[in-house]
Image (cartoon, rainbow, N blue to C red; front, top):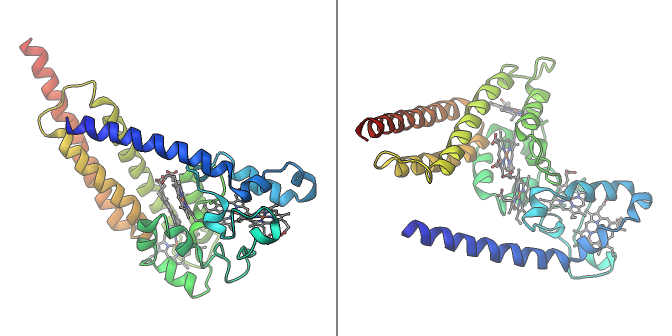
Length: 258
Ligand code: HEC
Ligand code: HEC
Ligand code: HEC
Ligand code: HEC
Ligand code: HEC
């Protein structure tokens, strides 16, 4: 009962968000102007950025240019719209590499909070060659194979060819991220099959608790404490496998009884 209410509430909210999102993008001055095909010849760079934005998770979620770049999305001249929009090389630009944790963190606060605890953030603020949000997540583009991008980013600084430091990190990270991926996949699977199978008592609650722990780990990945992430992921996987085994046993028991 409470689950049904939760689900229909969720659908209503999603519908509301979808409707208000399309209305918002349609009247957004930045999009209205930047989508012009004229830029293809006049300013290939602008055209390319807009093409990358199309179909991205941000476009789909109705996050418009001004959310990250600032400016006035109601203005219809470029000059008025661009007040506060600065080139990314400008230290005061909202998309300057050192400003990104703050800008992106307005909406991804859980990631930012973890990221600022990391040595990466310290190095970044120290002007050393350190990653910022878009080193690992291209902000503008559609969702690519996130894991590959991220792992390539790690190798770029921690790989063998780089004498700087810690060459083993990329391999460790690959192990941790693939475990994380398996855990995410299994959790997704349970979400679908909870409806179609009889599960042993209390397993839904246990899986839901594991799901919350999983979300917290994805946040914590941003501290880059690979040991802690590794052991927590293994524990979640272990518990999930235990629940699957119990479900299997319940299933066999029921088959025997009937
Ligand atoms: C009427 C058309 C128009 C509107 C409205 C407009 N832009 Fe632009 N934008 C341009 C043109 C033309 C350029 C390239 C020349 C320039 O910098 O003025 C540009 C350049 C940019 C750049 C690149 C800056 C750089 O230094 O390379 C960004 C970022 C940008 N716009 C963001 C925005 C945002 C955010 C909004 C809404 C708040 C917006 N634009 C509204 C036409 C527009
Ligand atoms: C989720 C945040 C986000 C959104 C939404 C976003 N951008 Fe960006 N944009 C960035 C970041 C971060 C950079 C700098 C890093 C990079 O190039 O990826 C950037 C860079 C750019 C640049 C190059 C700026 C320069 O100084 O060279 C342009 C042009 C641009 N964006 C245009 C747009 C337009 C037009 C939109 C809307 C259609 C948009 N962006 C939406 C985050 C965003
Ligand atoms: C105005 C709010 C807002 C800002 C600012 C913002 N995002 Fe997002 N971001 C969202 C929403 C909403 C989604 C889609 C729903 C989700 O996955 O959380 C999203 C999705 C993402 C995803 C994909 C998550 C997935 O499930 O695939 C990444 C990665 C991401 N954002 C990174 C960034 C980065 C990097 C920046 C800064 C350059 C940024 N975001 C700025 C709201 C924002
Ligand atoms: C050094 C690389 C790195 C940096 C820097 C980084 N992240 Fe991440 N991010 C990751 C990894 C790894 C994941 C987990 C990927 C996965 O799910 O397999 C992730 C996941 C995410 C997700 C969720 C994507 C999803 O699939 O649900 C968002 C949103 C996000 N990061 C935002 C940010 C923001 C905002 C910043 C800057 C404060 C940032 N990240 C900095 C590596 C990075
Ligand atoms: C742009 C360069 C750069 C990229 C990309 C990068 N790192 Fe780093 N990494 C650093 C620097 C700089 C340090 C800090 C070294 C120090 O201060 O001791 C560091 C330190 C670390 C540490 C040690 C942290 C600690 O607390 O001891 C880990 C783990 C790490 N990185 C993991 C990763 C992973 C995983 C990725 C990819 C998702 C990645 N790094 C991507 C530059 C980078």
